[in-house]
Amino acid sequence: MVSTLPPLATLPFMIIHIDLDCYFASAERTVDPSLKGKPLAIANRDDTAIFGITPKKEVPFIETTGAFSGAMYYDKFGDADWRKYFVERNGRIRGMIVTASYEARKLGVKSVMGLGEALRICPTLQVRPARMSLYQTLSAKLFAFLQERIPVLEKASIDEFYGDVGGWIADHEVESFIQNLKMEVLEYFDLPLSIGASHTRTYAKIATTSAKPFGTRVLWPDDVSKAIDPMKIEAFPGIGRRMAAKLHGYGVKTIAQLKEMNHLLDGLGRPGKDIHRLIYGINDTTIQSFRQRKSIGIGRTFAPITDRAEYARRCVILAKHLAYTVARLEGKPTTYYFKVKYDTGNKNSHSLTIKRPFSEKLFKDMAMEELTKLDVYPTQAISYIGMSVSGLDSKKAVHSLFHHEEDRRYGKLQDASLQLRKKYGIDAISWGSERL
Ligand SMILES: [Mg+2]
Image: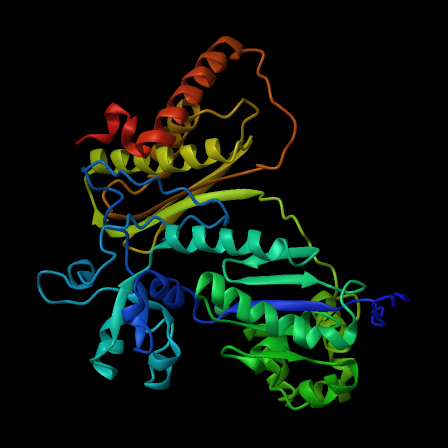
């Protein structure tokens, strides 16, 4: 029997870009299929739960993103009770659309629109509060599933992935590969997505966008020009709003026009060089299969408060949440950043580097000290507290000669409370200063 070798890929790179369609809405539909086919919006509002005094069972741990803000919804309102979450006693609707289903988009509902306005435009709109923990978990499962099928895979965001199948899947099989992948994900996860493929990241992303929703498209080298030349510059991935405005100032509206005015980009420094590279498909193939997280932070905006005891209490609570996450990530941060904002528009921030092993006790004390110092307008109302840590990727353990014994004790306490919290939730251990 003559065995035939599989045909080899001729393009050195075949990048695929996978993008879930209206992901948060689709994720809610996997839990509640009655939402399918209906105009649906996922909305967020300021976090009312975090500073509450009822212990929170759910561990708001975010494994896969660095962004903490707005991601700590406690799953209390997962059902049709959404009005309780978004409508205040005086009837005022709080909240902003994060994701709209395609049915809702057709009726004019879009992301970053106020929930009140969305409901006026579309009174039959179904609404669910964003449940980040659900979306994170589902996204992580999908990533693991895709990893088994794509040799080099990068997670670009919670609902977007890049993979390189160059040299692995023959060029003429790419089309059927991405179609099958799309159907497989629908079958296993009940999640619709779109996939684009091309020989650079940017072209693959453009292919995906043009295939949405629930489509696939391969953009071959010969077809790239035809696809990108008529594009408006602001629609091209990698050209930001400010750059687009600048280029508009020179009368450039489309990619074709930009190509004719190459010298323009030359005069725009590094950003101009980058855009040149992306448009012509140069050096735009690197897939980072593992991206190390460098920093993580938490911040909350709330109705202004003047009571400094309440300010201190909120600082401790945020410090606790962040410290817990750092512990779960086994991070060894050495740089810390704190920020406070007032309802007058004043703000104050400070960053510092401390070479001591991280522990919640150390961090909480530091947060209290720093945020007290930062509060330089004691008569003004505070509306925001934020804090972050960085240097999480540092491999080196830090030791302090002067605090050795203290740090060792803090470390032991840290390990013990981490175990308890993994089991019983973040409020299983709390500091006295969290109480009113
Ligand atoms: Mg998406």
